[in-house]
Image (cartoon, rainbow, N blue to C red; front, side, top):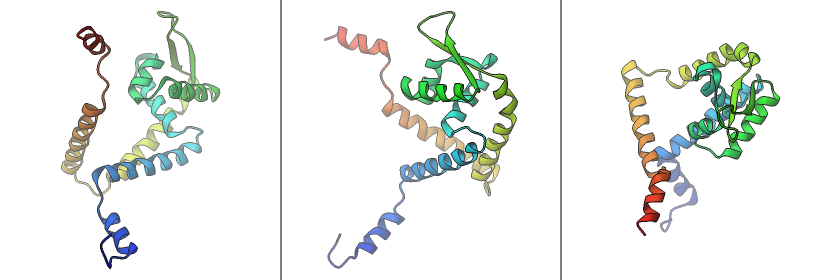
Length: 172
Protein backbone atom coordinates (compact mmCIF):
# COMPACT_ATOMS: atom_id res chain seq x y z
CA UNK A 1 0.00 0.00 0.00
CA UNK A 2 1.31 3.47 -0.91
CA UNK A 3 1.53 6.32 1.58
CA UNK A 4 -1.88 7.88 2.11
CA UNK A 5 -3.74 5.02 0.45
CA UNK A 6 -6.40 3.60 2.68
CA UNK A 7 -7.09 -0.08 3.17
CA UNK A 8 -10.47 0.49 1.55
CA UNK A 9 -8.83 1.89 -1.61
CA UNK A 10 -6.42 -1.06 -1.77
CA UNK A 11 -9.34 -3.49 -1.40
CA UNK A 12 -11.17 -1.64 -4.19
CA UNK A 13 -8.18 -2.11 -6.48
CA UNK A 14 -8.10 -5.83 -5.69
CA UNK A 15 -11.84 -6.09 -6.34
CA UNK A 16 -11.56 -4.31 -9.72
CA UNK A 17 -8.59 -6.37 -10.90
CA UNK A 18 -10.29 -9.61 -11.90
CA UNK A 19 -7.95 -12.10 -13.47
CA UNK A 20 -9.48 -14.81 -15.65
CA UNK A 21 -8.52 -17.41 -13.06
CA UNK A 22 -10.39 -15.49 -10.35
CA UNK A 23 -13.52 -15.36 -12.49
CA UNK A 24 -13.29 -19.04 -13.37
CA UNK A 25 -12.91 -19.98 -9.71
CA UNK A 26 -15.81 -17.79 -8.59
CA UNK A 27 -18.05 -19.12 -11.37
CA UNK A 28 -17.10 -22.71 -10.56
CA UNK A 29 -17.75 -22.29 -6.83
CA UNK A 30 -21.12 -20.62 -7.35
CA UNK A 31 -22.20 -23.16 -9.95
CA UNK A 32 -21.23 -26.04 -7.72
CA UNK A 33 -23.11 -24.52 -4.77
CA UNK A 34 -26.17 -23.90 -6.97
CA UNK A 35 -26.05 -27.39 -8.47
CA UNK A 36 -25.59 -28.95 -5.03
CA UNK A 37 -28.60 -27.00 -3.76
CA UNK A 38 -30.74 -28.11 -6.71
CA UNK A 39 -29.35 -31.63 -6.58
CA UNK A 40 -30.04 -31.82 -2.85
CA UNK A 41 -33.74 -31.76 -3.71
CA UNK A 42 -33.03 -34.93 -5.69
CA UNK A 43 -30.38 -36.38 -3.39
CA UNK A 44 -27.46 -35.93 -5.85
CA UNK A 45 -24.44 -33.65 -5.41
CA UNK A 46 -22.66 -31.85 -8.23
CA UNK A 47 -19.78 -34.39 -8.24
CA UNK A 48 -22.21 -37.30 -8.19
CA UNK A 49 -24.15 -35.76 -11.07
CA UNK A 50 -20.98 -35.52 -13.16
CA UNK A 51 -20.35 -39.24 -12.61
CA UNK A 52 -23.94 -40.12 -13.54
CA UNK A 53 -23.76 -38.07 -16.76
CA UNK A 54 -20.45 -39.75 -17.60
CA UNK A 55 -21.99 -43.20 -17.10
CA UNK A 56 -25.00 -42.31 -19.25
CA UNK A 57 -22.60 -41.34 -22.05
CA UNK A 58 -21.12 -44.87 -22.08
CA UNK A 59 -22.61 -47.88 -23.78
CA UNK A 60 -24.86 -49.83 -21.45
CA UNK A 61 -24.34 -47.21 -18.71
CA UNK A 62 -21.19 -48.80 -17.36
CA UNK A 63 -17.46 -48.19 -17.17
CA UNK A 64 -14.50 -48.83 -14.91
CA UNK A 65 -13.68 -46.76 -11.85
CA UNK A 66 -10.36 -45.93 -13.53
CA UNK A 67 -12.21 -44.32 -16.46
CA UNK A 68 -14.19 -42.19 -14.01
CA UNK A 69 -10.97 -41.16 -12.20
CA UNK A 70 -9.46 -40.10 -15.52
CA UNK A 71 -12.59 -38.21 -16.59
CA UNK A 72 -12.95 -36.32 -13.30
CA UNK A 73 -9.18 -35.97 -12.92
CA UNK A 74 -9.34 -36.97 -9.25
CA UNK A 75 -7.88 -39.69 -7.05
CA UNK A 76 -9.11 -43.25 -6.70
CA UNK A 77 -10.18 -42.50 -3.11
CA UNK A 78 -12.35 -39.58 -4.25
CA UNK A 79 -14.08 -41.66 -6.95
CA UNK A 80 -14.49 -44.55 -4.54
CA UNK A 81 -16.29 -42.24 -2.09
CA UNK A 82 -18.57 -40.80 -4.78
CA UNK A 83 -19.43 -44.27 -6.10
CA UNK A 84 -20.07 -45.60 -2.58
CA UNK A 85 -22.56 -42.81 -1.89
CA UNK A 86 -24.28 -43.29 -5.25
CA UNK A 87 -24.53 -47.03 -4.56
CA UNK A 88 -26.03 -46.36 -1.10
CA UNK A 89 -28.66 -44.18 -2.78
CA UNK A 90 -29.40 -46.92 -5.32
CA UNK A 91 -28.20 -45.07 -8.44
CA UNK A 92 -25.28 -47.38 -9.32
CA UNK A 93 -23.83 -50.77 -8.59
CA UNK A 94 -20.13 -51.49 -8.30
CA UNK A 95 -18.59 -54.92 -8.73
CA UNK A 96 -15.36 -56.59 -9.74
CA UNK A 97 -14.72 -56.54 -13.46
CA UNK A 98 -15.22 -59.84 -15.24
CA UNK A 99 -12.27 -59.03 -17.52
CA UNK A 100 -9.86 -57.96 -14.74
CA UNK A 101 -10.51 -58.92 -11.11
CA UNK A 102 -8.33 -55.99 -9.92
CA UNK A 103 -10.66 -53.48 -11.59
CA UNK A 104 -14.18 -52.47 -10.62
CA UNK A 105 -17.07 -51.86 -12.99
CA UNK A 106 -19.69 -49.24 -12.17
CA UNK A 107 -23.19 -49.62 -13.65
CA UNK A 108 -26.30 -47.47 -13.63
CA UNK A 109 -29.42 -48.90 -12.00
CA UNK A 110 -33.04 -48.72 -13.15
CA UNK A 111 -33.64 -46.08 -10.46
CA UNK A 112 -31.08 -43.81 -12.13
CA UNK A 113 -32.44 -44.39 -15.61
CA UNK A 114 -35.87 -43.34 -14.31
CA UNK A 115 -34.58 -40.07 -12.80
CA UNK A 116 -32.18 -39.06 -15.58
CA UNK A 117 -34.65 -36.95 -17.58
CA UNK A 118 -35.06 -34.63 -14.60
CA UNK A 119 -31.29 -34.37 -14.20
CA UNK A 120 -30.89 -33.51 -17.91
CA UNK A 121 -33.56 -30.82 -17.56
CA UNK A 122 -31.76 -29.24 -14.57
CA UNK A 123 -28.47 -29.29 -16.49
CA UNK A 124 -30.12 -27.61 -19.51
CA UNK A 125 -31.62 -24.96 -17.20
CA UNK A 126 -28.15 -24.17 -15.83
CA UNK A 127 -26.70 -23.95 -19.34
CA UNK A 128 -29.52 -21.59 -20.38
CA UNK A 129 -28.92 -19.41 -17.31
CA UNK A 130 -25.17 -19.26 -18.00
CA UNK A 131 -25.57 -18.20 -21.61
CA UNK A 132 -28.51 -15.82 -21.17
CA UNK A 133 -28.09 -12.72 -23.32
CA UNK A 134 -25.34 -14.13 -25.54
CA UNK A 135 -25.75 -14.44 -29.31
CA UNK A 136 -25.06 -17.79 -30.96
CA UNK A 137 -21.77 -16.39 -32.30
CA UNK A 138 -20.76 -15.22 -28.81
CA UNK A 139 -21.64 -18.62 -27.35
CA UNK A 140 -19.47 -20.37 -29.94
CA UNK A 141 -16.59 -17.96 -29.35
CA UNK A 142 -16.86 -18.50 -25.59
CA UNK A 143 -16.83 -22.29 -25.99
CA UNK A 144 -13.74 -22.10 -28.19
CA UNK A 145 -11.97 -19.75 -25.77
CA UNK A 146 -12.80 -21.93 -22.77
CA UNK A 147 -11.56 -24.97 -24.67
CA UNK A 148 -8.26 -23.17 -25.37
CA UNK A 149 -7.91 -22.14 -21.72
CA UNK A 150 -8.56 -25.73 -20.65
CA UNK A 151 -5.96 -27.06 -23.08
CA UNK A 152 -3.43 -24.48 -21.85
CA UNK A 153 -4.00 -25.60 -18.27
CA UNK A 154 -3.79 -29.29 -19.22
CA UNK A 155 -0.45 -28.73 -20.96
CA UNK A 156 1.18 -27.35 -17.83
CA UNK A 157 -0.53 -29.64 -15.32
CA UNK A 158 -0.55 -32.97 -17.12
CA UNK A 159 1.57 -35.77 -15.71
CA UNK A 160 4.01 -37.32 -18.14
CA UNK A 161 2.87 -40.65 -19.59
CA UNK A 162 3.95 -43.70 -17.60
CA UNK A 163 6.19 -44.86 -20.45
CA UNK A 164 7.94 -41.48 -20.43
CA UNK A 165 8.83 -42.02 -16.77
CA UNK A 166 10.46 -45.35 -17.67
CA UNK A 167 12.34 -43.71 -20.54
CA UNK A 168 13.71 -40.95 -18.29
CA UNK A 169 14.90 -43.51 -15.70
CA UNK A 170 16.49 -45.66 -18.40
CA UNK A 171 18.48 -42.69 -19.70
CA UNK A 172 20.00 -41.90 -16.29
